Image (cartoon, rainbow, N blue to C red; front, side, top):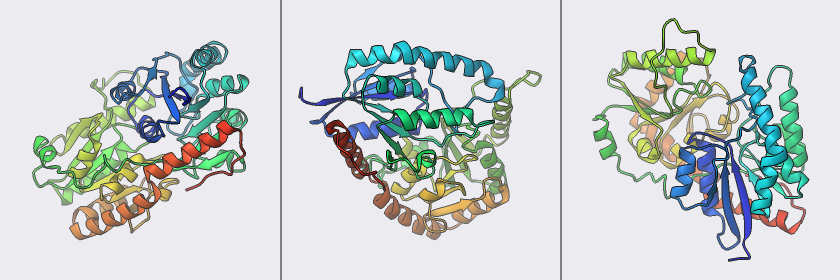
Length: 408
């Protein structure tokens, strides 16, 4: 298979979230006779281990930072030291690390897995290596807009093709002919609604309790604290209800008199609220068995405070589970309100509690919405459809052909 084109993917993250999973599923679906994937990781993580487990060639961890400026993560004013470090790492990556890796690997094409990899996109452009730039999160506005303008310009200038996972995420480049909208997708063989959750429910002593699943850990942007406050109201009506929280959680107990950043205060309040309702809240931690957890749940929630693409919503659709999500873009591209789930105002705790109680109290409504969600997601978020679009994009770029932007 020496004729295969090497695609060098660059991944930025430290956790096992939607971005690495989406990348994994994409790579697994690429035509193996045409493309040779290699993934370079900036950081050591569970994601790196997962790719190795799935026999995908990996490089790294390289140990260099990217330059994040998204609504999910960007540097606040009290992060100035982190911003300086990221800027220095970006410069070193541009001048030395990225060129050295490109010369070593000789890729036919570079695929960047987030907007923040500006050094890697710029270096590839200067070395005449085509770049597919995946936009998986909306850019942050920041304080005066300089960083947003910088990243928007870098992506627009250095990318051969820009792939946004929603219309909302692609807005900064909406007028660019380089932009394609290709939704994230789900492997239906893994998210199989026929999975039997009895062992999972037994292991977590769920019995016949009504279960809510949240995949987001203690993320402020994903809305852990508002969800907990709504769940407290749910317990007054359904005392036996259980809230399952998957994702990273704080391990250190908050110190009462320690000076903390706003994010630390948030995590401390989340921790204390969880302890208050320890009998009704189950912490799953970072998990790979998301389909089984979803099979055990009655409702999947995504109470985001910042609008971004939510992989758990489409995964829930394939599992025939109704969803409740914040009424924000692009979540309104993923949920049809009152059909596949419910969209609720982000900060309206009472409305969230009412929505949860409504679905938990009606098996019929959950079944109807779950079936509608399955039909909708099967049509819109098909993994073979997504991988065919990406492979088509690669083929056009590597042939040097002009291509029309792709869409859902």
